[in-house]
Image 1 (tube, rainbow, N blue to C red):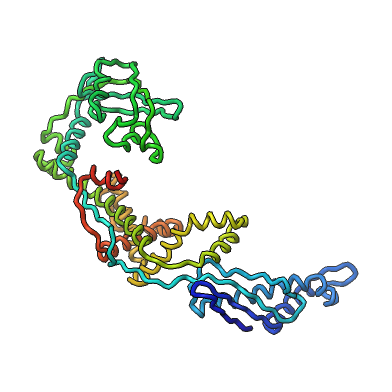
Image 2 (image 1 turned 60 degrees about the vertical axis):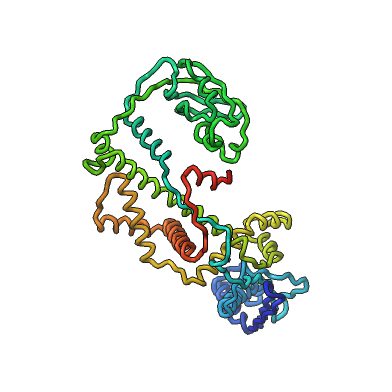
Length: 441
């Protein structure tokens, strides 16, 4: 057995595996002798079949199988011992003059090698970390929403300013049919709101979607239009009024505060707003973190330059699926997956450079916190450690769950690392401004 490597360039190599008869013959003989013991051929007693017949009937198939076992086993050992960082799998090179009747064989394999590069997390970039605050406008709106939610609903016959309407938005041609509750102040233009004044249950008001709201994304909520189709949507929709209601706002008193937050925990409107602000900004922080993670990822992809063995990878892509791809299909698949492959390499380098690892204790601790939060949502605020540990054990016995949770733990570790090392500028914004920044509007 002899294995050699010829580096074609920094990203491509050819590995040659030379197998001699001594490498495979003993195992071939052993297999054929087992066939001999168990062979049942008419005219011969069991165990008395001539080896020549066994060789003729099974010899070539056994030879191919045993040579392939020796080949794969030793190729894998070689790649591991040489610590070669390869992309995809070795691709066998076809040899039209290959002769299975020879005693010694030579096999060539193409390798795609991972590129050498470094990741500089502290390099100059255009990444912004958003600190989202709950501004006075949002807090006042939330207080009013709470007053409405706990207020008294009064059915009305005719629409007036300040009333809420429940009805159905429809446009048959565009497949829109969605029931929603709206207030007249939701519309961008006051002229639109005036169209409803004086209307009754059963009346239909026709509206233009273009400029209907101050933010096109509200069309996704009220009309259930896909995000991809919402921008610049310019069609007519009908709104059929089904209910007209006025709300007598709940009084901001101690009874309401106790109902919302428990007895004595909030005693004034100022404290109510502080509580709303605290809760809202916790939720905003996770959204800001996710955008930061996405933006750093995009920045690393843009600024970390390295070549890939593209020709090799396209050939490899042709072979990996259940159905072989044409060169044209492989080209398209490579174009779709290139950025994903690049980020996998970048992420791997970041993990190695910063010695980031997931321990079982990390996974167990994270799973425990997830479970406690889920239990709290169902009113179990103080579960025993024994109960939590029992659920953790069951969850971590499921390999799919372990994989999913491991990805979440690693994402948190990457986020912490990026916050520590990436030199991003911090920008304080309201949630409304953040949404505009997020969607580039």
